[in-house]
Structures are given as structure tokens and as C-alpha cells.
Amino acid sequence: MSRVHIAVIGALLVSACSSVTPFPIRTGDVCFRCRRVISDERLGAETVGGGLASKFRAPGCLARYLADHPNDTSAVFVTDYTSGKFVSAENAFFVQTMDRNTGERDYIAYKDRAAAGAEAFSRRTSAVTWAAVLEQTKKDQRGN
Image 1: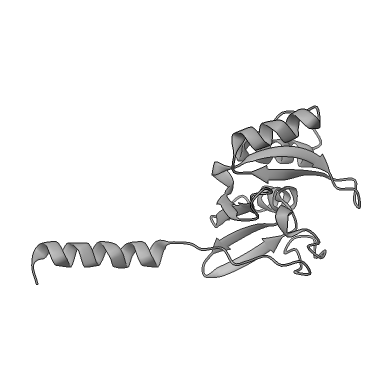
Image 2: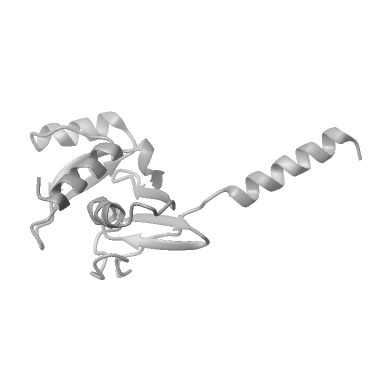
């Protein structure tokens, strides 16, 4: 086997072992943070790290968990509200909403900036990044 073949096989093995895939979220799953039932799969979020997946009922619940656990280095995924498919939280846009059951601020995630913008416009707010969601959550928890 040539060096090129060995290098290609090695690269494929490394990439296969390092890829992180989220697990499906289903209605009825329980949120890792608040222990409430996930009632809308399109709002679900997930962390994957160390071979474990933790499911969250919505991006806001996940952000509160991460604010409380700043050393968590898990991969973070949110569900694109339009397609129902996972997207990295870093690549999503978020629109603030209010959880009718708890009165807590939460977010709807969109992969597409235009879809997030349209939803934000209808709610008279702005679409924000995951970094902004985390920052706002940390401020809220500090009481600012």
C-alpha cells in the first residue's frame, strides 16, 4: 500500500471517529436540565459529548444549562424550526419567544437567516446569534 493510500485511510478514520451526530428528539423525551417533557420537537436542542447526548426542550433551556456549566465542551445542536433538522447552534439564528407554560424567555432556532428575520419581524424583535443568546442568558442569571 502506498503512502498516499495510508494517508487517505488515516484521514478517513480520524474524521469518522471525530464526527458528532445528534440523536433524534421525540415528543415525550425529558429535558436534561429542567426535567420537563419535550412537547414540541421543533424547539428541541441537544448537546453531544463524551459519547452522551443530553436533550433539552428548547434553546433557552440549553442556554441556561450552559450558563450554569461553563466548562461543558459538548457539541451543541438546535432544531431548525422550519425543517425539523438539527443544525449547529453556532450556525443558527434565534428569535426570542415566551414559553406560555412557564413565562420564561426562550428562543426559536432557524438555519436560514431570512426565515429568522421574517419570524423576528412578526414578533417585533430581532434575530440573534447563539453567542447573543448565551450572553443574554448569563446576564439574566446574574440579575442584570
